[in-house]
Length: 313
Image 1 (spheres, helix red, strand yellow):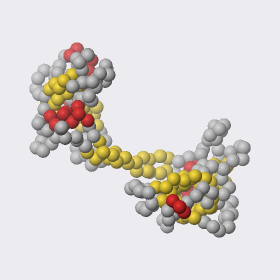
Image 2 (image 1 turned 90 degrees about the vertical axis):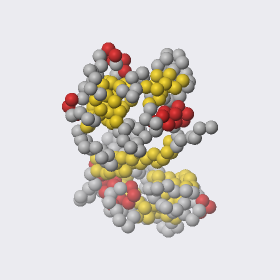
Image 3 (image 1 turned 180 degrees about the vertical axis):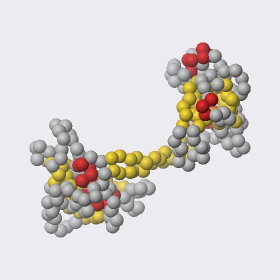
Image 4 (image 1 turned 60 degrees about the vertical axis):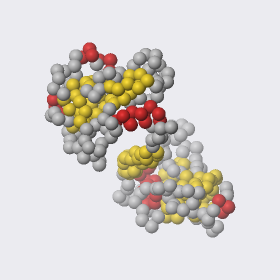
């Protein structure tokens, strides 16, 4: 049985957004250890606050302070915290209806074990030692058996309000390519490009997926394509990507390899970026130790006729 390939992959990017007056007041309030909700026309107080009523869609601006104490409405035990979660030890995810609020807020509850958590238990906010105007200013909730805390009646007006936030989004997962793509990857290690032919429409797909995307039938017949191909479409990249050691501007293109019926993508090198064009004939350039072509360069052949690749655009 062939080896099953797998590899850890990480998708990560910073997500930045600006804040309207309601969200700005809410996050600035957390920085100042004040919890604000927004009151709807029917008298409900929504925490966390939203800018538009979820029932009537009317704009909401009436901010009202609620207490830092509340009641657990439901919960789930997290026995194995992951990177970036509020606590680095087992804890409970809880929905807490803060005193004075009509909706529940999701956060972590620091508890000794699932036996110490119950629906209806009283809790209070544990504030982070350093606060910047983010939901993480609430470090977590903790059990509380004292008297209810009265809110101070803050009107939501702050100096130096938070106007925007940046949240790092990240997804860690293990990718397993499957039979067809494993064969494709194995061939690349030998500097060959292998796809699979559909038994129905007879098209050759690179990289293969194990099934024809047009006919939906399984594919198994392996076909080697290229190594040369034709640029079908392209774009000029002017913004340098993080951790990518390529100077801008550069060209990224769709390349239809000879014998393939689906264009793959690759970087074009060996030619000024403003001379790349549709129909340009290219070939792969490999570097030692790489498992895929580093880039594609012009072959010196005449450009391909448009009719020969128009169906692959």
